[in-house]
Structure formats: structure tokens, C-alpha cells
Length: 327
Ligand SMILES: Cc1cc2nc3c(=O)[nH]c(=O)nc-3n(C[C@H](O)[C@H](O)[C@H](O)COP(=O)(O)OP(=O)(O)OC[C@H]3O[C@@H](n4cnc5c(N)ncnc54)[C@H](O)[C@@H]3O)c2cc1C
Image (cartoon, rainbow, N blue to C red; front, side, top):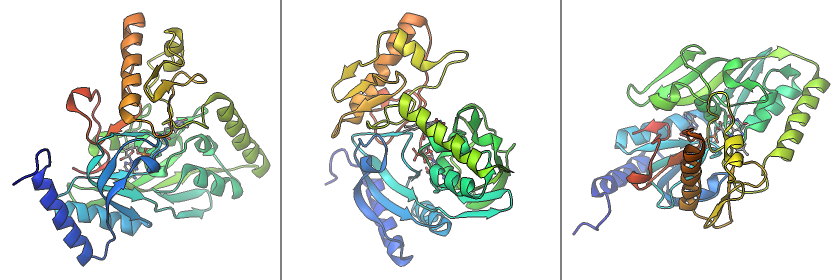
């Protein structure tokens, strides 16, 4: 008899994935907690997890999901995600492919490279242009996906080309900066579902001491203005045109507003922080409350910048954005 509430078709596909993984000697974890792999540290387990340590392992994991017809998503550093308390059905591929190749002023980085590691490698090679990345606690792939930016810089300023894989064609393609359709916290990858394998950046030579000083100043500024000691996922809402989400939230008197285990940060109104052992549902409840109050008070419809992934009740999903990968 089928167990109520289970997707039996997915369960049999997961069994198929396990068999295929054994044949291909790919290690697969079952019922793995995903919260600890995100900066917010809330949410449930994923049915299956593969850890990819290299670009080739990342491709192999993506092809495993494609061949087994199991939905799969790529997890970078988990710094932009709220994982549902009910967890994620299917496969999560944890991308730790982190090789960096520097040739003159050209830098190529695997998509699992931490932005901070990339910045450090460039700084010690006397290369300038990517210092802003020190404030982005994500991976290169996640930063390309979001066209992440800080301190007046963003990924589109430095990207020359991106190597990406498409589940539709099973092909690896090289895309130019223009192909990537970068816009404010946006790129083609948010809708195409293609997975970024690596990125090529063009930087400039600079004075090593001056570059290191800029990086230090960026870090100092962030420590003073963001609740970095608390569990958070960065800015919750996009800035509406000509304004700042944080200003609107503060003006609505919502700083410190708490629901259950989550609250609007008292330091930065566009951050939601959550208690240890807290709940993704509370993060969502605080975010939705903020949206309603700001819409009522100022007529502004705040859009989420963070991604809600996994098994959220369908009536809650405002901007459903599946993780890049195989769907
Ligand atoms: C304290 C803090 C400060 C932050 N400050 C900034 C900031 O200043 N500016 C800014 O822009 N952001 C900021 N962020 C948000 C976040 O760091 C960025 O959006 C980052 O680019 C996300 O990368 P990630 O690897 O953590 O992605 P994840 O959170 O792991 O994933 C986010 C999405 O990206 C997709 N993705 C991940 N890797 C790939 C890949 N290889 N190919 C395709 N899709 C992929 C995932 O599938 C998912 O849909 C901040 C976050 C925190 C916690």
C-alpha cells in the first residue's frame, strides 16, 4: 500500500538513482540535513546529496540526476537560501569545485570557489577589480547566478565568459558576458536553470597594498552595518527603484519585529535573523509580514531577493524560483 503523502514515482526514481550512482561509483548521502549547509541554518533534509569536489564531479552528478530523471538543484555556499522545514525532494548537489587559474590579468575560477577565496587569490597576485566580492559570502556560481554585487561593483563588471551546462541538451557551452543577460541581481541563469561550471574574469594590475587596504575597508564596513554574528541570508528584499528596502522597513517601525524564532534585525532592517534551532516557517512569516506592512504603509511591493527552496506549502510561494539544475 502506498504511504500517504509520499511521491511514490519519485521514490522509485530515487531508488534508480542509487543503483546508477553505485554503477558510476558516485557517493550519495540519504536524508541529509541541508540547513547546516546554509548561512541561515534552518530547514529540513534532502532526499539525496552528492558532494562534488571538482568540475568533473559536478558534471557527473548533474548527469546522474538527468539520467535517473530525478529533480536536482545545485547548492553553492547557501548564502541566499531559505530551505523549507519540510526539506527538499530530489537530489542536492553540493558544489565544492574550487580550482582557480590565474594567467596574467585573466582569472578562471570553478563555480564552487568561495568569493572570499577568489578575492584573496587575486589580491595576492596584485589584481584589482574583484575587491567588492569580499562582502559576498557565496560561491562564484551563486554570484554569477545573482549578478551579485557590493560597494559599487558587481559580477557583470568583471566577467568575460561563463562556462555552463544545460540539462535540456546535456551540453557545455561558453557564454559571453552579453549572453549572460546580467541586470540588477539578475542573470539568464535565474530562468534558464543552466548550471555555471566556471567563470572567466578580466581584471587589472594594481598596487598590492592598496588592493589589500580596500578589501580590509570593505570588511570593516560590513562588520559595522550587518548582523554577521547572527544566522541570516543577507538582504531579504531587493531594493525597489530609487529607494532602499531597509529604509522602508525601518520607517514602517518593523526593526526588531519578531515571529517565533525569527525577527527583523535590529542592526539592519533588510536582514532577518533567526535563533539557533529556529524555523524556516518563521523566517517566511516575518518576511511576508514585512511585505504586507510596507505595501499598506507605502504602497511599495517588496520583492524577495532570497530564494525559498524545497517543499513549501504552495499557497505560500510568492516568487517560486527552483534551484539551478535538473527539473
Ligand atoms: C551576510 C550576507 C551578506 C550578503 N551580501 C551580499 C551582497 O553584498 N551582495 C549580493 O549580491 N549578495 C549578498 N548576499 C547574498 C549571497 O551571498 C549572494 O546572492 C551569493 O551570490 C549567493 O551564492 P551562493 O553560492 O551562496 O548561492 P546559494 O545560496 O547556494 O544558491 C542560491 C541560488 O543560486 C543557484 N546556484 C548556486 N550555484 C550555482 C551554479 N554553479 N550555477 C547556477 N546556479 C547556481 C542555486 O541553485 C540557488 O538557486 C549576502 C548574503 C549574506 C548571508
